[in-house]
Amino acid sequence: MRFALIAYDKVDSLNIRLENRDAHLAYVAKSGVVEMAGPFLNTEGNMCGSLLILTLDSIAKARDWAENDPYAKAGLFETVSIQEWKKVIGS
Image (cartoon, rainbow, N blue to C red; front, side, top):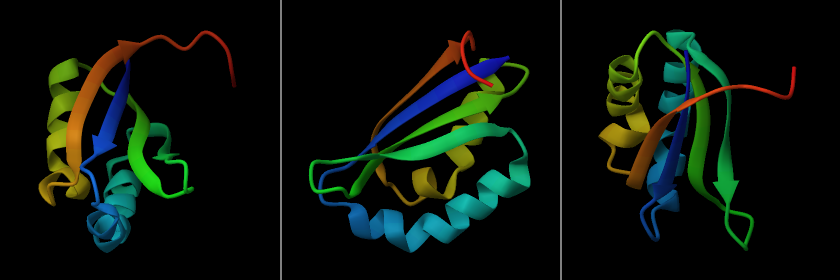
């Protein structure tokens, strides 16, 4: 099953994101469950949130993955939403 993880950063937290980016990217690579991902950008072009498509067996596993993301552990996110998602278009 696929899950869309949508997270928005706390205000003025770009430094938290940058300080934890390498650990986050290593976690993504090591876990092997991220089909696609990327940051949201604000009007200044700075990263301000995340969209990840996870492939896991359950929403509980998606929540667990999200809670163990170094970004989450560093307190980066203001909000996190996880929703089952069905791919219809795209390769």
